[in-house]
Length: 67
Length: 142
Image (cartoon, rainbow over all chains, first blue to last red; front, side, top):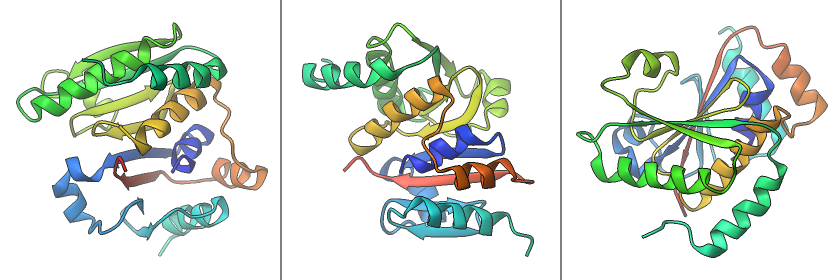
């Protein structure tokens, strides 16, 4: 899931954290991680599995949309 | 006992030919919280840093170096911040082995170049972001 890190470099607005799920069981539980990779953006938008760049960007934009 | 095999080292050295500038790996540990993982993480980072003279390592303690941790938004250990000419916002929580290891190596390279491999459309959308984005990627070594 290198897209997240590349997006961090592309924008000062973006911070990305790769979390080793088995070493952080509490975080994994809190974010209901059942399968990996699981991506959670701004605690609002989430998806499982590798996705193409366009879909990943769509999720990022959805996460910053005003509700 | 090294974590990286000679074969791993050779593969990483080859990848590191693309490093374009200095990279600092800032490691946060806290022996009381996760002694074995923190030790393993520090060892891994040191072994990686030995494979390029562009990489430096700074080891901090989450409990003692609180201001630094807050500035980096780091609140877990073990953690790694991958910095290039500036802090791009790349973090790893946990020991990045297996699949995450290749992610770490790729992060080091993109942090050094400052040139993400993304489409023009994606770059334009990211440049136009008006609010902060926090991306968490849960992963496992295999």
